[in-house]
Amino acid sequence: MKLYMARGTYDFLKKIEDKHPNEHMVTMQNTDTSLLIHETSGASIFKEPRSYEVIDSSGTFSGAGFAVLNNVPVSDEGRPLFEHRLKNRAGLIENEPGFMAIRVLRPLESNTYVTLTLWQDEKSFKNWQNSKAYEKAHEKRGTESGIDKTPNIFSSPPYVTQYYIPEEE
Image 1 (tube, one colour):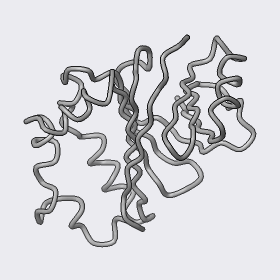
Image 2 (cartoon, one colour; image 1 turned 45 degrees about the vertical axis):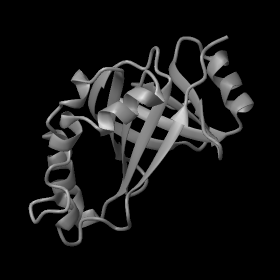
Image 3 (cartoon, helix red, strand yellow; image 1 turned 90 degrees about the vertical axis):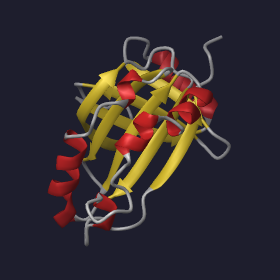
């Protein structure tokens, strides 16, 4: 399975989504930009998308109102270890109230992995950040056994982007 992303204005991207009702797509926005994601086993409908292979997946996009993208630039030599950690994640997030979906994405043309989580709303995401499951998922962060302390794994600092998914009218 592949996932493609395109940026643009909300109206432009929403028209693309509406033009392809049989495709698995979601348009989202924040204060800076809008993003359209397209999940498919076929080719992208975008001319120049950011392209990813889905290496772990749970849940569906339907009903989501909030999206969080954890963007992690990984060095070439760090990829095997980073993917091993991703594939062996605890999986506790799936049981959280308001959780809708997760996609762990391997970049096809860059070095930035993305963990995309979709939530019913922003409050559900914030509640998860304050939960025991979040503590458990991140318990090694900042310790010697944490991946963030492994030398030469990241090519630049990770960053998070958040988007709202407007309700259908």
